[in-house]
Amino acid sequence: MVAVAVTTDSPGRRVAGRVFLADDDGVQIGVGLSTAQDPRSAAAEAALLAGDPLNGATPNLAVLLTSPHHALQAGAVLDIVQEVAQPTALVGCVAEAVVAGRRELEREPAVVVWLAVLPEPAETFHIEFLRTPGGGLFGGYRFDHSRDLHLLLPDPHTFPTHLLFSHLNSQDPGTAIIGGLASGAAEPGRATLFCDDKVLASGAVGARLVGLRARSVVSQGCRPIGDPYTVTAAEGPIITALAGRPPLRLLEEIVTGLSGPEQVLVSRGLHLGLAIDEYKAELARGDFLIRAVTGADEATGAIRVGDLVDVGTTVQFQVRDATTADQDLRESLLHARAEGTPAGALLFTCNGRGTRMFDAPDHDATIISDLLGDIPLAGFFAAGELGSVGGKNFLHGFTASMALFDRDRR
Image 1 (cartoon, rainbow, N blue to C red):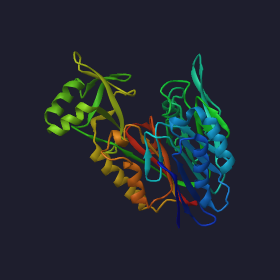
Image 2: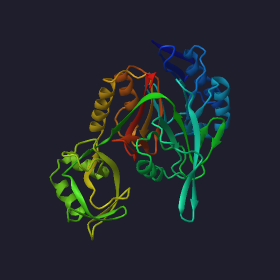
Image 3: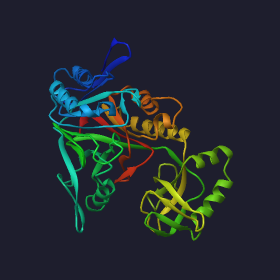
Image 4: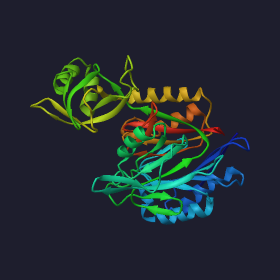
């Protein structure tokens, strides 16, 4: 059953809420959106709309997302959402743009509240990275080898997500994390994270979703060009040889053989895919961890990428392509739908997508709603997307990363 509430009570303002009502012992999820100019009014409206279809059940997880327009009043927004929705656990952040239902609100004030009645209470946490003479350590929460899904929203300026993932992938393999880097602040100290009744400016907030059946979907916005090559010489993020040759010389040969439109894609932004499974016989779209090529040395032919690259890694040049991104998202969702229609979803889509990539607004949200049946969806445009691929957690770029929540407990 799907309940929809829509009201229009003043020019230019529209609020809506959707919820899928599962069986009494299953998952119930609602989402509310308000574009009211006043942050307090927006918070109250979004929380009411998200909670109204839950039939009086107390949500044990709330996700609160706001546009930067309300950042200065973040404390008031949080207080009102807590008062109206009364969730037992809450996480969230201020983000560059937010998502609710079929809408991606990129340049207007908005508050989104996503409420869930889950089989077990969610366990919220706040992690800080503490620098030490020997490097650093993570304090505030310890991942305990559970197989529960963890929702994680880090501040990219103060929290080294890549170091956490490196540790978990080696010391606690199988830990599943979904989320996105908060994108609401352009500099350190200006982030706004929500954890229960607190507003925080650093670290990462998250929630452990106990006993919940959830699926992770990671859809990339790039496609490979040329052939795969093995890194034969590299130092940190600088690659000096692919298959014994300067990377820039190989790239020039690849570009020469491309069509005119493909050459334009290369000029707009080049990326490098690092193979996730080195032993896969044939690599295709979706088999790579995408990293931007951030520089090149014409004299030596070396390139710099946005990650550390080990000698022996298989890589392939990639381009951003709206058509491919659209196709990959549709295929990923159709595959997920074959496993059952979810009760709701959280979406973390790259802030390089949206109208920066696609000709029409609301691209990702509309496709998800079309293919999964208008499930209650919320999310935001992230500065990096978190998702598990092949049993390991990665920080992605140019992707749409989703958590799909099943109706029944695990």
